[in-house]
Structures are given as structure tokens and as C-alpha cells.
Length: 251
Image 1 (cartoon, rainbow, N blue to C red):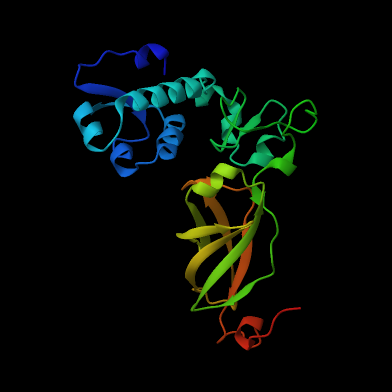
Image 2: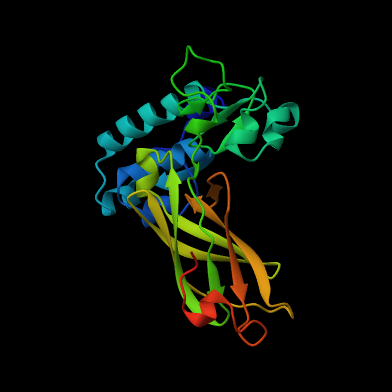
């Protein structure tokens, strides 16, 4: 988006804004939501001044904050089309920065060969003249456990993660569970360095004693931490000696 578009004239009763969608202004009254959305997506629409006033916004403050945030975001934002950027094909941070020409934009959760704009940037290993370089700085699942669950029971799963950037704590968290070839997304909560997935029912729908599943940690709705959390679900009718059925902790 060019700055010329920002200067587009509107009538005296309207104000030009850039937001994630048309409901963001009425749906959120705190500026942190607005400023995050400005950097995420660039959609133009017009909001009536009278509606802003009814919602309690001071117009001078609105103009000042929106203008500064928009120009700051656009100053170094992505400008290359995805089809001209081969790095866009990499969906994980570690895989991205294994390529010498690629960098990982943390807030955008995006691999690119160009500058990330106003974002935390992770560079390939060997770039010792920058602050963040190498896979150790990638947001990722920190450890896994050898967990086995009994089929038909509901469980809360906690997953330890690392490289949690401060602003992530204020955004939504979810767990994407892949089990029996099906994907289920449940709400999650970040407490300390662990994500707690909302209770969900573990079912082994196969005719085998065990079925394997994985969990991906998502932040800001659909941005994934590197790695996945593996687990197994056993059917007690087919495997009565399963540790989950016998309530015995596996050593």
C-alpha cells in the first residue's frame, strides 16, 4: 500500500482508517488491538466521525495514533509478491533460517528474503553481528513427554514452550490436535512457559490397540510454534495392560 492511498481525500463526515476488518473498531475499545491490526493487514474503509464520537473516541488522539502507527508499519513492510519470494514456501522458523537467504519475521510468523519491517527478525546461523540468529531463538515446543491416554477420557494437556515474546502473552492461544486423521482446535491458556490445552476427549477410533496423535501450539489464532507434541491413545478393551488403563505411571 502506498502512502498516496493514505492521503486519499474523504468528506468532512468521514475518517479514513486501516484495520484488519470492519468490525475491529466496534469490537475492541483498547488501542493495542487497533495498532496490532494495522500492522497485520492493510484494508481501507471509512468510518463516520459521529460513530467514533458515540464510542467515546477523541478525534485528535485517533488521528495522531493511527497516523504514527500506520506510517511506522508501512515504512519497512513487505513489498515483494509471494510468488517472487521463494522463502515464503517455508512454514517453520527453523526450516526458514536453515536457508542462507531467508529470515523469519516473528510477529508475522513468516519466512521471507526481504526485510521484515517493524518486527522481531531471526537470521540464519552465522550472523553474529545481529541480536537474534540461529534456531535457538525460534519460538518452539521445548520438550515432549511419553504420554499415553485412555480412549474415551477427557484430558487437559500442558505443553512447555520456549522463546515466548512479550506481546504473544496478550494474544489468543489455541491447540490444534491431529488424531485419527482428524484435526480439532481447542482454546488454550498460556501460564508461565507452558500452554494448557482445554480439556478434550481422547478417542482411539481405529481397530488397533494404540493410535498416535500430535498437538501443534497456535498463537494469535493461526500462527504456529515450531515442532509438535506427540501422544498415544490406547483402547483398554484391546490392550488391558496399557499403562493408562492400569493407572500406573510409566517409568
